[in-house]
Image (cartoon, rainbow, N blue to C red; front, top):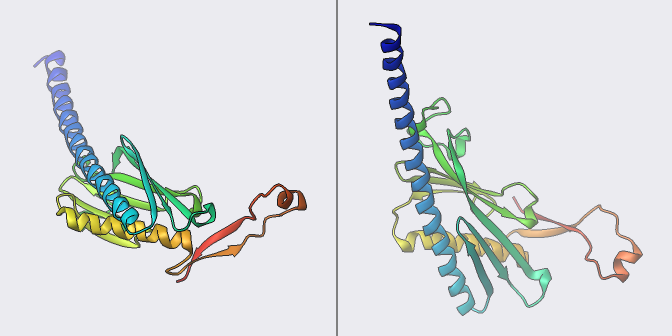
Length: 210
């Protein structure tokens, strides 16, 4: 076999392996996308129920992004908001709390990768405060401040997933009204008389009871 023929054979194997890897990753991302849509649908459903129960709640949705806002009373100090977004990447999960039971931190093949959905809240700082890992076989796991730890499947019944979304909305109500172990403490940041005269709110920090 000539060098050219040998090289073409090897390059063909590279091409086939690359195609398989990309197919796995596309499948995982598609599973994650489907879960994000069902999760966002659930957020919209429980927001409607919250309004019927007398709470201010609204959602704004734009593709792979959803904002959920809850108002526990008709003034801004009793408001909380969370933003959830679908990431375009897939990778091997390294967080033990989010890892698939059939995988390990040493599973780096693309077939074992997960997709992610992240949640942010202004009350919790700049970093994501809720993380979802979604696997190609339909398993999802999450951890964060809204739900400490949970798991399920992307094809769980609507009532199951909506119940999970209700937990998130309830935690936002806790954040807004400082109930359920959520509370605020005075910040150590400087606050001046001009701040007060300009009606600038005093900076406080949200904390949760252990």
